[in-house]
Image 1: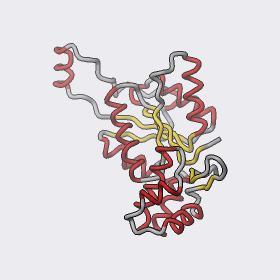
Image 2: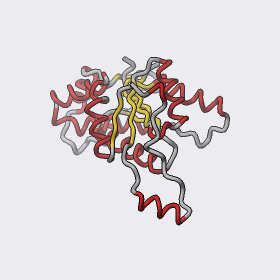
Image 3: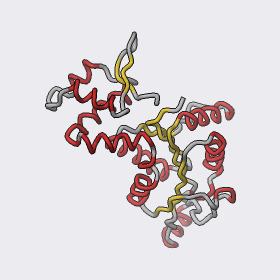
Length: 228
């Protein structure tokens, strides 16, 4: 089942790229109700299990972002999965080449080889709409303007912020609780928002009306992300 708030992040498994997308995840989750996921593959040893895990994450996501810098084969496979599943996705490419001087220093010091950013994107993706970026700021801005703002769940969030600008900070606390615990319970929310001066019933009602929140009853009662 698609989770409207979930955005899958696929990138080359190199520290610089992981840091970039971990930062993107941290910042966007602090500023919006989105839930960004980077595949945690450290504990998965079987290739079949890994592919199944990635496929499930892509299938369940309301949108996907794939960094195709250097024509990375793993990212290319993930893009193929997304294309086959009909997932909504955006490609990104880092076009900033390392300077000759820095490459020389790495070579002299025996450092790891730099990703060849100039390497063409794989042929099947050449004509696909993509974001080219040289800095983190450029990547973030373009992703918001050209991709995230067209996702249905992001549009609901922007409508809510427009209608209830003063409630947005309190709403973000609700979503932080859901991401942290899988649900937000009334007692935890009352404790978290005690000093905020926000009427919790009115806030929760507005979030539900805006399609940003659903209420679950029963043994695991609480407030969760909506399923549609």
